[in-house]
Length: 307
Ligand SMILES: Cc1[nH+]cc(COP(=O)(O)O)c(CN[C@@H](CCC(=O)O)C(=O)O)c1O
Image (cartoon, rainbow, N blue to C red; front, side):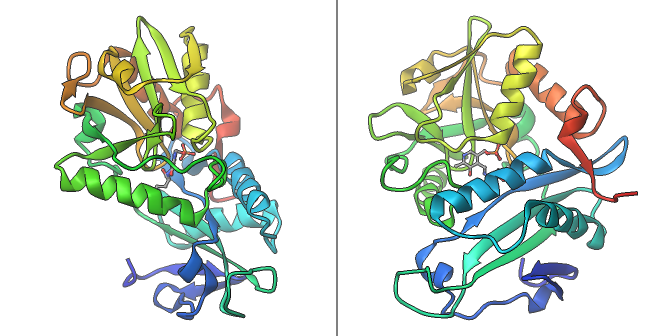
């Protein structure tokens, strides 16, 4: 992805893609103390619009607040820059990555003497887990790596360093021939995927793990809202891995993953072994909303071209 055309915003300037570089002694490159977001812009009825831009930008600032990092721009500015990253790169649909990171102004672990840099990039990104995954579902393995402990890393912050845990879990799953990993928390309850939140369906009800050690997913919130508006009861509770085994349906949610059915966990087929009816209904509605085909949540879409 380093060799592309287009422009990336860095510290207030738009740079040619290939020139958006940092020094090898950049603090966050060594220690992972940055925060970031992942958003999607979709082409729909009103042209290209970013899905839940405000919520993602709010979370970026919450992540920085948790990490004690001061972002040197305000939310409106970064909201505008994220829109600009899409239309400036002439993208009809896009994945948008803002990231705040500590620079190379000094070494040593402390960061209070370093400058906070901000970059915003956008690119075309298709189905995160493969186009057939959205319909066929994926095969998942329970990870041998425990999800970050809530007092070792800050799970409500989307912090760069939190993703070493995710990388280890995903690579292990891939090496074992699976598509994704399910991480358990330190007490052995299901937490989330390496980059997704987890949902299961049982007896017509929708369950998802309590937030505790998981990221407060925006897609998770969207799905809970859509389900409740359908009259489906949504329960947040502790979920064990064998409750997933015996679920009628299971799926992951995330900005990149969207709504990806889980057809098997640890060799146990889940339900019919393919996308279930509740999953399909929620997925279909989700795509209606992100493409502007349903307009009863107008606050969820921000057109990237202001006029
Ligand atoms: C650990 C984790 N948990 C849950 C989610 C779902 O959150 P939300 O996108 O707000 O619904 C994500 C997003 N993972 C992002 C990063 C993926 C990546 O490869 O990087 C994403 O989906 O954009 C996570 O990284």
